[in-house]
Image 1: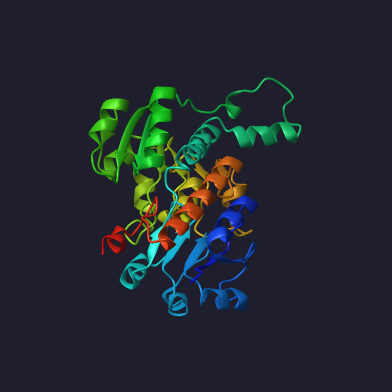
Image 2: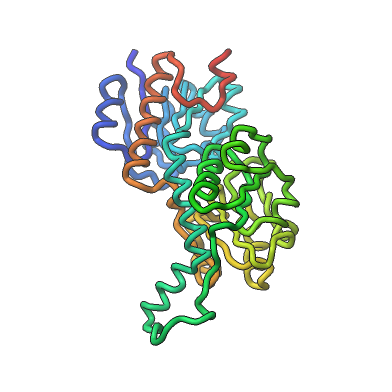
Length: 325
């Protein structure tokens, strides 16, 4: 029997051809809603699902009785009910590794742009305000030699820490991760509890995954613990941060600035004050958004789903328990 795959994220023609050589493919290049009747009809017959950015619910799984595997074109998997997938014996695959360095580039971009006020001062020139040599009103903050606090020290966190320690001579602290002796030796990194990290860091960068335990991990109390000169960076997930508390901390100068690639609601609502604040650099969730990386992520997902449907172990698997069983 020919297996059926539903793909709902833009793929290269070569990647679609690779899928079509082995499976029947229902392709939705643009999918605005999970309630699209054609998508739901295709899902009801699907053995595999490839895509990203769509919330998959247990109710949707009820309508997909043949589903064997999902290959998400992302490293995060908060859009998927992992426990429910595991209970049903459905493999969930993701795309770690291929986006690590690109996303770390974005994280360090935000560190540099906020510290040196790059976006604000570029606008300063555009508005014709640069009429004489700049003074203290336009000064930024140094990055080299400062303390970088990583909340989360997985692949991406470690890649950002390397940029800071090896490229800028930063002292690296980390929390919300088990001690990592190899990184401690490589980077001179030091494990701290969250409270101490917040108090000691000049830059606090969040890279933890979104889970029930990390939702609103950073809120009013955490911002109050940071230095008033501290800069906050979030490239994890928007809901890891209490956004109202962040806005308040920026408005009352409890913290100095923020660099944000993710938000509680995306796209960011027009009435959000964040992109209009001079001490905020706001980006439209571009962490992995380069031609090379997005192509590599999609290719990993294609490879994962084809391996899974052939009964072979996918390259990157979230719910290992399903495979072991």
